[in-house]
Length: 346
Image (cartoon, rainbow, N blue to C red; front, side):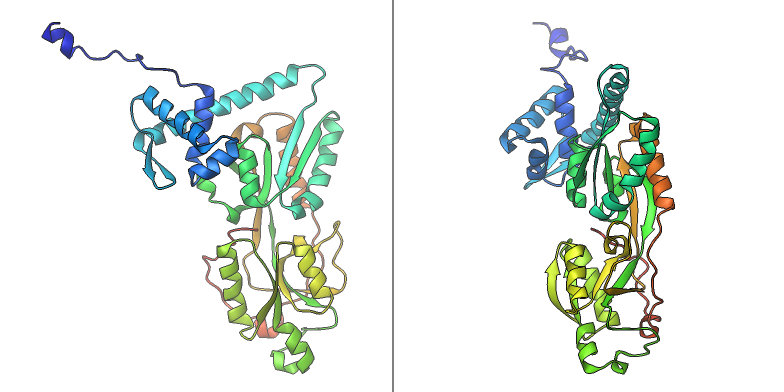
């Protein structure tokens, strides 16, 4: 063999294998999850199988796509480049599938929605009714989920639209478009027999009512949310203590209604079937509102009937009537919390 043959560069395109659509979907899921464990759960693959697929893809492209750190996978420069291209390809494939579905006779389009229960109860039905007038054959597959589960369903293509609080996810890293819907203010829910109207200091209340005011029902929706709620109670009701923890606003309001304590909750979660809650007072407070959004793959902004559905969601949210809220009690009016504070979960 001559020196010229030895030094002859490898021709572009000579690779051991192919960059398949399945490999790109696996790569995309790993890149958008914090750990291999979460990615394998989302894809329904074992961790060894997933790792093997990533290793095979790296062999095809001829360079590492991730830096391995314990169970974490950190994108390399080549990985970041491939991710941008993979998102374009996967988006185009989704557009192709959705577009062909429109031409297929006898096939009904199913809009798969995953989101918070309050949005599914109060906004989704009105939007669906509007879309039904134009697209009578549209069907809906609806899932009541926490934000992490909504993201998992979007990544796994088991949902087209996610209805969540924008503060519950790092929007820049999701790969989805955020369509603003509404702001959901927080209130202090208080038993009906306790009035805080015009109260300058809790000591104006009877000892029994002070005791109720100083007991709270709180929500287990993530470490960041829990910490911020604790900071709020420490600032406005320093003698307050937690007596119950729940993952359901409905359960919390039931405890408040029974006179066991108070709770900090978003207004929409306090509304049952669009009607004001019974047996409680809702007081405005200086706590950052939830910013509710529709999280969607970008192609659905232009593809029907999804585009009409997204517009209907915005219209329904804009006309949603919140229940009457009482003014902030004087002893809570001058409370100032950090501007950077935003809810990170529900």
